[in-house]
View 1 (cartoon, one colour):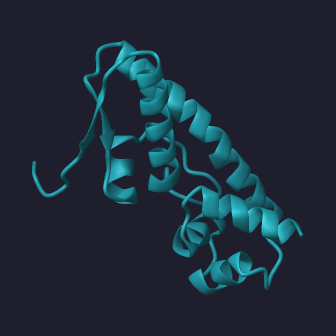
View 2: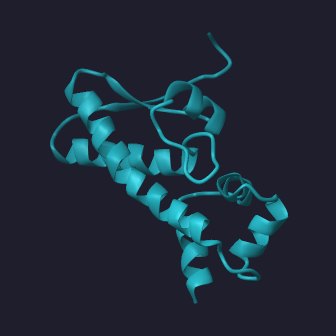
Length: 132
């Protein structure tokens, strides 16, 4: 039952098996086994998932504060590498080297929705990693 909970959390965070493997420091195959319920989640990985879930609230508040301070748009990134290059302030969890795009997108869209509910019109801009 706990395996289903952790697999559901990972899925809801938008984490791939490769990203889960990065968090745990194990192989992609082992991560796929975890997500399929064939193996129990290590306690440190389960804790890291909960930390990432908590990070979404912090990121949401940060994005909203950036807009309140005059940043004109919410920036979206294409992948983990682009996110980590632009937002080094997002902590890595477990053995990961930085934040993940799935949870960041959840936070960005949650902030966008909250700002619009307050009557603040803000654009979402996509960072283009192919241009300087």
